[in-house]
Image 1 (cartoon, rainbow, N blue to C red):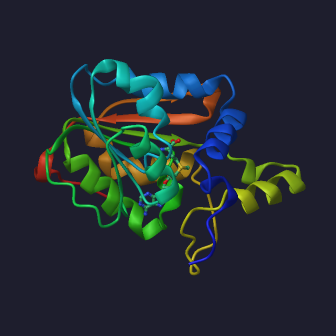
Image 2: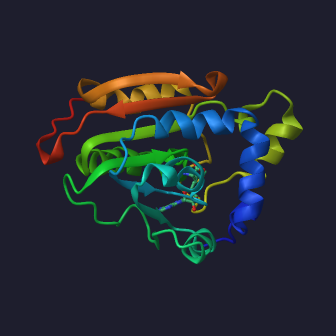
Length: 214
Ligand SMILES: C[S@@+](CC[C@H](N)C(=O)[O-])C[C@H]1O[C@@H](n2cnc3c(N)ncnc32)[C@H](O)[C@@H]1O
């Protein structure tokens, strides 16, 4: 595996990058998710990163939180702060049907190859008792019209595990809509938030009885 991207080497650097990218919308991004979650519930946050969602938006709601991320740097930092977090690969992490009230995947779909995305989404959806929340960015600097910005963003923003078979790409609105089409019967709500930067899907729970029609 190649060396991790710079911003994955430090929780502080990563949080600064997110602040820079989202600016005043960072708060809105977390708050929009937190609003969907009832007090005192259990939450599985897959690809939790530095746990910003829990630290800033969920902790005060008395949530039973479980973060999962592949990056040991982020996980060690979270554990040092007393947050329940496991270093594991989401692709192999066992999520039993209806095992958490809410399952969350935020800003992380592009970390997975196109073949991995649908099975992952299905497993996470089935793991939820009350709802599966998917929040995904749809505007990316790697597609910026100024070529040096696009090149720089591509260099610093590549996924933790880039696939040699697939060129690095980030999901745009139409890609996400295509990916979510089989889940449409289960969509409780879909909002475009953060000034058009992010889509938030809320899916009703199904357990392992789900039927995903392509
Ligand atoms: C763009 S960050 C998003 C972090 C956080 N959810 C947020 O919205 O700020 C993507 C995260 O996915 C993690 N990640 C990448 N591949 C993963 C995998 N296979 N299993 C678990 N986590 C993974 C990275 O370490 C990183 O923390």
